[in-house]
Amino acid sequence: PSFSMAACCAMPVPFVHKPNVLVVMATGKMGLSACAAFVAAGHAVFGTSRDGDHIGLTGLGATPIGPFQLGDKASMLHALKVSQAGIVFLNTLPIDANEVAQGAAMLAACKESNVGHVIYCSVSHCDICPADVTILSAKFEIEKLAAKENLRALTILRPVSYFENVHDAASQNPLKKGYLKNLHDPKKRLPWVSTVDVARAAVAVASDDTRWNGKTIECSAWNGSSMELSDALSVASGVPVTYSVALPRFVLYWMMYPLYKFVVYLNDSDDDVDVKYRYPSTFTELVPNPMGPAEFFTRLGKWSDGELFAPKAVVWEGHGH
Image (cartoon, rainbow, N blue to C red):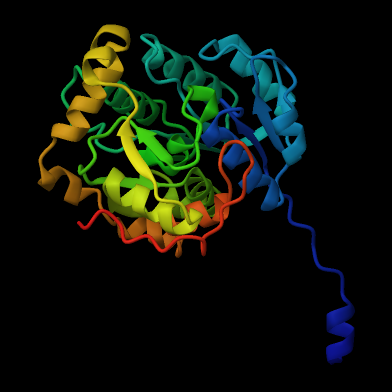
């Protein structure tokens, strides 16, 4: 028998269930972006929280799970049971001496719970840096542990510098009017990306775990220096911006030695290392139009005190580089 087009269009469309998502370290910059992206994509999202409840998560439409102890297998198993997660977006805490053990315990829980797809947010350069740069090298150790777990599906995302790091009141680095600070040398060119675009990449790989299983993706949207970043902020805000290093190296050395080793390595690495991570085509395949600094600051639109940017107030000629 034949069917009319109207009859075909009237037929019900089968409902496609999207797997639940558990975001680990959900209340940090990367975690909140991941929650927002997966919620927007139609997933039921659960996020771990040390406090058990978190207005940032509920405001995004995600369900907090906690109190959650990072790196504790029993805590991770409980979160997986409550969330019934088919996808886990996994973060581990840098600058923690137990980061590898954290990762091992949470990966073991994912394996035991038969999670369908683990997406691990690692870091670029982790596979080529010296072993004593533990903020990076620990991530590579976790990547290797993840591969050994023989998970149903595993994808590694490797960002380096987040644009959001220059506007991070939680780390005592609010974006104050006319000033930009981070830990890098002013003219050192590094790969940058927004957590928003890393989260978009996570959603994209989660939608096709067969294709992206076993893949490692360098997440870089723009390669540039902190001076160039401050120039972009000057144009976006309409205010001349002065760049400064947030903490001198000698202070890092005595107060946060692992962070000191990380900063020295990235800033003293030769240009050939940077080029390898500059514009990975796989990332732009997942995220066709990732934000550069101009788009990021335009999207941000205000200083940390809430004052709005006024991009037409000043014509900024930059630092002449």
